[in-house]
Length: 331
Image 1 (cartoon, rainbow, N blue to C red):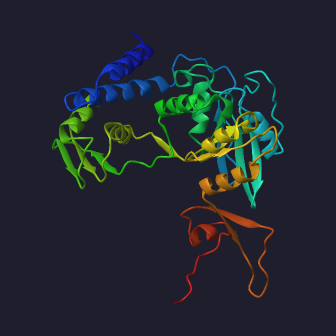
Image 2: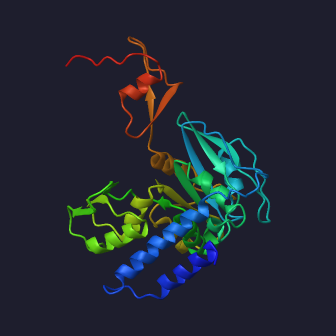
Image 3: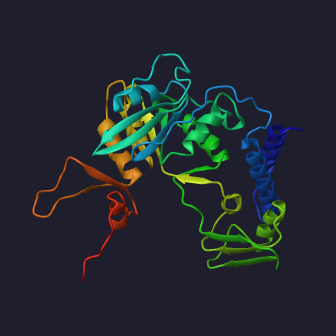
């Protein structure tokens, strides 16, 4: 039985197993096995041919944004509107066959926007060019998920499932769990909060599935078995995602209002150029960029050349750009 068949069998087993106290250990083991098989599926094949065009695009600018979605949702049109790059757009599917980069110039920042080929269902298992698309998406600072507003929530749930299965966690934070394998001493389990989803026995079962028999585990928040597995695997990517519903000119105002009120969502129309300015504002907020303007003593600030910093940067990060020594002012 191949890996895909094993994954399918485990998913069916999880779906038909009722969730209760009696089955929580069984479900925990199934989820651990599922994560292992999915990780094996993503490993590059040694016998795979090196032929074919890749999606390696040099990272440039102040931030990188990946534009993903199903075919014919308006990704190429959006890229052409927001940047000076012309991406082929047509009424048929799979117009874009490789990664097309563009640059959004906004508030003095250069934001690299990557128009990726359309994802199809089963992309995580290698269908279409799904693995290449998802690999590039993992390197982005923010994901823009372009959705067709006329197709409801179907596309969103399918894309979230594909990204979730390859370790991309959208709009989530890294679980606050301390985990450290060690050479001996067994499993040391502690928690600083009351746990309602995991127990010491379940944690040990999951660790044994990964052939880990000696480790130190400390839960600092009430996490699920899935989140604990993410910590063990250690290759998960946590990134913000904007859900952008395109083609709102083709649906009712009531539906537009409903979609606009959903968390992390923006409604636009590339065809009629509606609400694109608000999308840029939201993108700037999700990237958490800040403009720093410098001035010489006794002169006005230079607003023509901004220093772009990410959230959490300090004066030392600004100084690195000038190759000078940072000397703090006296109190």
